[in-house]
Image 1 (cartoon, rainbow, N blue to C red):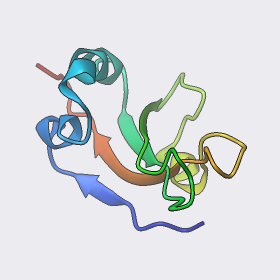
Image 2: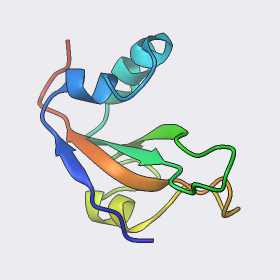
Image 3: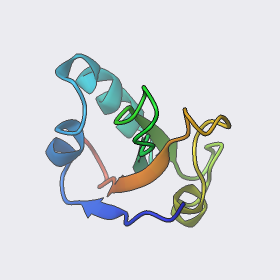
Length: 95
């Protein structure tokens, strides 16, 4: 599945895509990431439709480049599969 992936302009915009309970986890993830890619389940027939995940991307990560992250998906089962929908590029530091 090909999705239109949007670039997020700020860390606050990234956080707005997730529940407040995981904002501290996002901040820790972002501290050592070049990019954070947001994946979402887009399968309207799935009970997990709308579920989101954040993946740290960059040198030393399991996915080292943004291009690779945007071409892939998370999870193997079609009902669980999440596709990239947005990404945030880290500045030098996150407060």
